[in-house]
Amino acid sequence: QVQLVESGGGSVQAGGSLRLSCVASGYTYSNYCMGWFRQAPGKEREGVAAIDSDGTTAYADSVKGRFTISKDNAKNTLYLEMNSLKPEDTAMYYCAAYVGLVMTAIQALGVTRADFGSRGQGTQVTVSS
Image 1 (cartoon, helix red, strand yellow):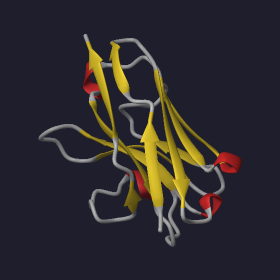
Image 2 (image 1 turned 90 degrees about the vertical axis):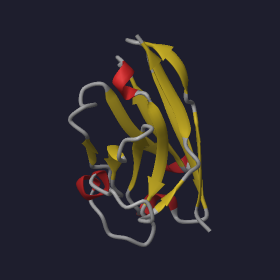
Image 3 (image 1 turned 135 degrees about the vertical axis):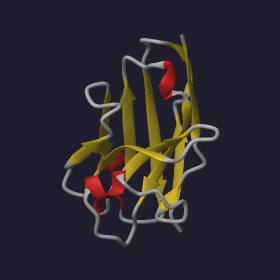
Image 4 (image 1 turned 180 degrees about the vertical axis):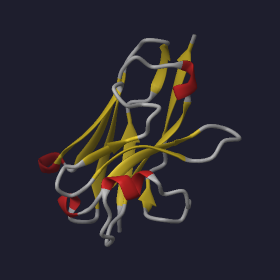
C-alpha cells in the first residue's frame, strides 16, 4: 500500500523560505513520477512541481525560479524547496505519487482529478505579508 507522509510546512513572512519533505513507502520509489500540488480554500487543485523517474522536472509558471523539486532515492524522500515565498503561495501542499503509471513530469503537473494517483495528508503553508 502506497503511503506518503509530508512535513515541513509552517507560517513564514513574505520573502521567506520553507522546505517540504515527503517520505514514501509501499512501492518501488524510484520507478514512478512524483509531484507536489497545492489547494487553497475555495480554489482548484494546482500542480506546483513534478519530477519523473529519470529526474526530469516541471514547474508551474507561478513558482518557476522560486521552487525546486528534488528527490533522494536512497531515502525514499521527495523535497520541495520554496524560496521567496509570497502570500499567494498560501495553501495546503500535498505530495503525490503516480504508482503504476507511465507519466512525464509535465503530465503530472496537469493532474486535476482528486482520485488520480496517491497523495499524502498534506502540510499547511501560510505566508503573511
